[in-house]
Length: 91
Image 1 (cartoon, rainbow, N blue to C red):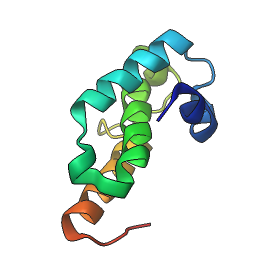
Image 2: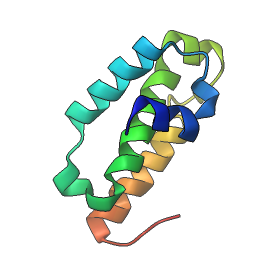
Image 3: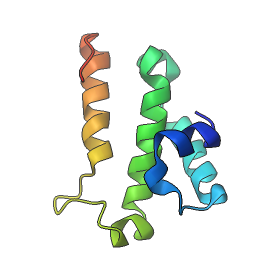
Image 4: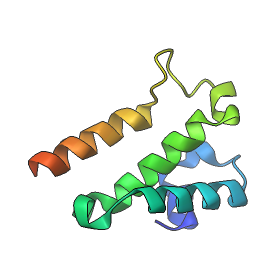
């Protein structure tokens, strides 16, 4: 996922600098496997990036983190993992 694609898919992070968003996208790419995630890789790439940004101090100030430490993005990432493990799409 490119920075431009991330900005379209996750407009809630419009105030994050391009540099921060790009570094976070790069970290996500290093943590995820295209082989394992297959067609869901682009979504997982964006979701992991959004989760990391939400957990950052700015995201926490914006109240993007639940009391239990999860985010809406970590929940979606779990659904993606389940879909990939079971080869069933979860929406």
